[in-house]
Image (cartoon, rainbow, N blue to C red; front, side, top):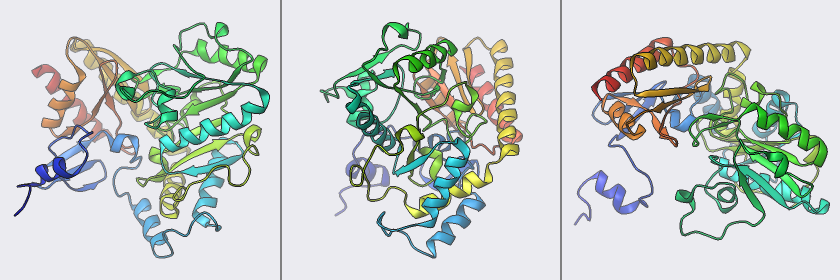
Length: 392
């Protein structure tokens, strides 16, 4: 006899219940839309949480996957593989950095960066890792050690020693010193409410780096691969990282992460000091390379224009509806901070109106459409949002 009566019961019965799931049974997805098993069509302004840069099943991604699928899937990192090499070459050309290490996810990229910075810093007797409040770097012990939110860490202590979490508005000249090994941060905090890093923080950081010689690690897991109108969000600011964390959109919809390293740390690790079985999977690398080859300067310019249009229209809506306190973000990474009502209420109401978004901390509705979203689709979103806010 069946233990469970339907698919919902099977999901909760067999899968560890750590996600708050919407009642959407995905049948298929194409472009900017997801379809359920009842034929309903949802406008996807979540993009798999910034993963599907070109939407679902874009032609160039599907062709790249099919082409690689006809050759081989997994052969291990003991052998030379063209998809890895070509993607690494592309990332180095974009960033001007030196070496790439491929992982499977953003969290693994964070872990790799922690290990690499420790390996660089230990001979120099530098011990302290500094990170910022409001950040999100992943779910592993290393990543959680760089985050202050107890909701992610409850009952799982202790975490790594020598990690100091500060506010980006703090006077960091009193915090950073000769013991500082590395500073981790996102230039725009995704989970932290689409908050942009203060320019004063970056200016002070560069002065202190020249004085104390520490590393800068910029987390581009959510902001990278064109999301802000640049290949990487740090390009919008006057700063150059020693290490970039990448994942999400990097794999074209498949699991892939990376750290992209400067010359300064390009020969710190020796054979066997770090590694992964599946990192740099050829299928994911082929898909990711297809995405990066598709994204050119003209495409990025369009991302910027669409982001400006979306933000301007949201600004106009804010003037008409006092439930919107602030519009934040850059490019097609946009946040709406709300007054009086929880962001979760708006997310839920939009879901019932067949629009998919998610919430972020600081009571923000997070908007992450595919980068090739049309103006027509943006207008549909704006109409549905206005309708929801008016009803509330």
